[in-house]
Length: 216
Length: 410
Image (cartoon, rainbow over the protein chains, first blue to last red):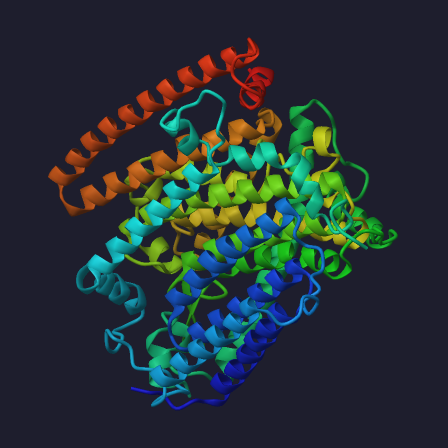
């Protein structure tokens, strides 16, 4: 059942929507990668508020924990470590093939969204699992759906993630002289933090706003 | 009037009769009282920590401002407020100004979902003694504690200076690592409580102390959560991000005046709120024997008492333990705490299902643990061989870099 939007609902929606849209524009328009990442946080937060508004509290919490708490933190980590935060001159290199491709991909995604949601493009499609039952229904219904109906996709996705993690570890591993590729696999997998800790010294300083890696 | 779909998802009984002026006033009063209590408790916490530590170190501690030095924090706050607010030349101005709030606001908000007392009835409305009771209560705690990373990280980066940056890189890697432990132990609690709401977690432990999660789930999840929360707060012995002997103060080196005071405030507020969260998750929250005199007061007193005990333990740990080295910290998190938390989660899930499954999973965990230990032993042996070879000049240029950190520390 669709509830009629009340005044508090409408106000909350308006504020959250403005936050999300301003953040999204900021991601695209800000020159500094760190500012862009912060704007991304703002967008994700606005979307989380919209999730709460739509009664999907669990999704909102997961959005904040996973995206703002982990993924954007990793973005920032990379920006700080490898020092890519010099201001980009976006229009310096003219119109090239990559930009054209980006443009058409963006158009394709937009068209897809419009086509998928053409009937209820304001409210979105109805949920697959049907109506919620009770206060904690968010979590229990989601759990049921994931571990019964959609078990196979869920497991395949998790296997994919594990493969990605192992692949990243293998790719990032140091190659030492006289060290066969099959050696020391456990060492590489067992020290996820050591790379960040030891390498922090020299490249990290590139990332500071006034550091040596920045042109001013 | 609240639309039906909205009301269905709210577990707070305050909204059972709809949303009116009385409900609004109740909410406002709750917010204001929680804010005031938290501020006063932070003031007392700073005084308490300084007093207890100086007692443990055979000193007197603050004793000039007010009775027993109680007003020392107020005096310090006033001093900080009137100091000059410096902005480093190389700082990123916007982010530098924003960062302290990323630290303070989550610290405040975590406290809103902690149940500080029982349930009372005021003018026909059932009021839970906590600011908010969302159906995903404990996830809000995790989400906000993961937001707190930004304060530390951005403060260090935006200062445009070396030591703060190193401190913040350390701190954010540490906080992300220990968040995994925090989440896994919370899942163990949720398995037993059958709900994510903090009120449900507290209710599931009510009536007797052997129902408290610390006993029901075995002591391990509590120990893991307590260690992980200490690391999450960057408190000693995990305060590598500040490490005044190595980093000159860490991520807030460049901060002064009121902005520094905000970081300080956030740190101590987090100590208080995390103690409160530990009490909620593992020690029954406001649960405890009451008397028939003023019935609503006893749960609050029990909650406050338990929280003070954990604040004391935090101070005690700070006074007693030396700071960890960075690789020890990461080893502790990834090689010990996370596998242990995962194994314990599986075991508890097995016992929730059936006794046979529980014992089978215990056996499986022991076998897997032995295999993991053996493989790590083999890897360490091989690494030692390689670094020895590197010392003799046979192993190329990279190997000594790996081994040298071990040698310096060991």
